[in-house]
Amino acid sequence: SFSAEAVPQAPEDPLFGLMAAYRADSDDNKVDLGIGAYRDNNAQPWVLPVVKKADEILRNDPALNHEYLPIAGLATFTSAAAKLILGADSPALAEKRTCSLQTISGTGAVHLGALFLSKFYPGKPTIYFSNPTWANHNQIFSNVHLPIATYPYFSKETKGLDFEGMKQAIADAPEQSIILLHACAHNPTGVDPTQSQWKEIATLMKQKSHFPFFDCAYQGFASGDLVKDIWAVRYFVEQGFELCVAQSFAKNFGLYGERAGCFHFVTGSGTDSQATIGRIASQLAILQRSEISNPPAYGARIAGLIMNDEALFAEWEENLRTMSGRIISMRTALRSKLEELGTPGTWNHITDQIGMFSFTGLSEKQVLKLRGVAHVYMTKNGRISMAGLNTGNVEYFAKAVDKVVR
Ligand code: PLP
Image 1 (spheres, protein in one colour):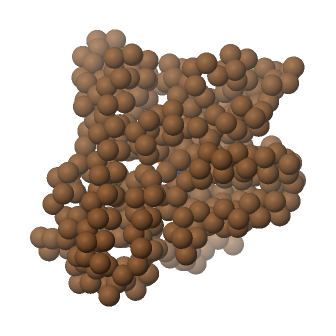
Image 2: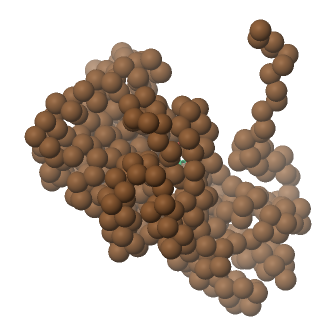
Image 3: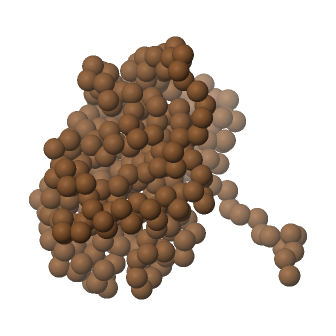
């Protein structure tokens, strides 16, 4: 029988524990390199100017109300979100073989996809994650009882992609496995395959009839170019894969707390693909209904307004370049400070890696020492959020790293 007393204590979420420790630290020099949220050069949250503008337009709209959205979400938002992923001229869109449901940000999209696959993918397939991956992937897919395995991804030697290991694991996985792929700006490593490596991955996956599950949390945030960052997903669609995409607007719109996201399913181009996608959409709607009934409106309204207006869209692209540009300049600054200091080791990976995060190669011991001695907060795996660095603290951080590495 159920005993409330027998429920064990769950471990603390490591990232949110780190944030609490940072807040409690009263040192003036403290540096927060933990959480994956953009900060401006003054270490402050940044409301994108285009988001501020859209917010104002919405607030002044006398027709705005607080009715429920449809189960699948705000249609003007989901259709713009699909175009952003697939391209406005995508044959998959023209042939109406895609469906899109608004979700509780990227997390909700990953969950909806996981739930759908656990219910409709025959034979309890194993889902393969990169090692390492966003820690929440494990929890989300375990919750729906899909068996989990990993493929090698990060090479400790080069601090780049372990491409041979990755390919071997994909080739060795049982046919029709699900392979989770980060569309760009891999979290936590910052390491992405090149376009020619993506092509090889696609070929291998096709040979083995694997199912691609793309997690796309950083489109436009990695390179500053929305099209460049989504290249891999569009390539897989072109190659005729049936696949799904979990899309987050948390980072690229700075809408973290508004929970704007979307889940997309794309079928192959068979004769009955429209009927197929109709059935898939109907099942996704039932799952959505049972889980959240209706998605939250405000973030989707903001993102939808911007994506559907040419001038606002152009301003958004400018804002994206501001964020990605600042991060790229911090990568350059950190690498050159470390090289100036003659810090033991090589530091090219800091500028080779891309997006919000960098896997520094620092050991857990060094990470803890950095926290104790220099009040620098980062996850134990040596990951830093590049957005936590700015012109005021990058030298301080480089000097602290130099000290603990020696
Ligand atoms: N997937 C990856 C790889 C992420 O890094 C994140 C956020 O950190 C997410 C999904 C989902 O984030 P959110 O639910 O805030 O959109």
